[in-house]
Image (cartoon, rainbow, N blue to C red; front, side, top):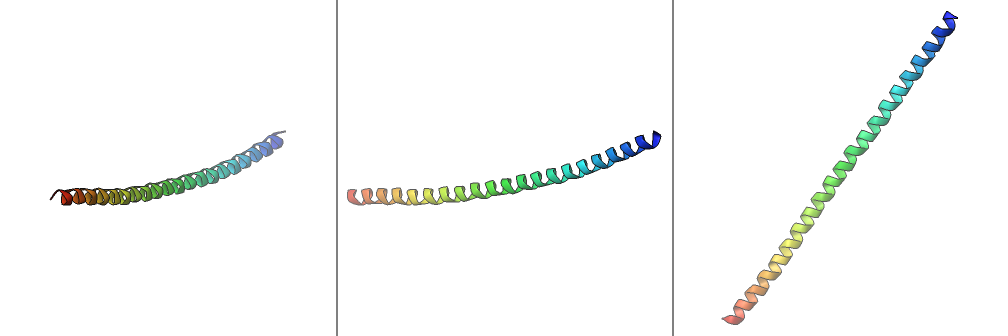
Length: 75
């Protein structure tokens, strides 16, 4: 009877160790995916910021040209 209990405890210990190892691996995968997703979002935000800056410069140059044309017709 004691031997049977020892075997069951040993089996439970091994099962728990396997569970912990697999859980740690799964957590590491999720954490890595989260880091990659954050980097991807940061890259996307930077691209959008640069695109907005370029659009702003184009719009500013356009308005500056319109203003210069109006001032030229006044003179």
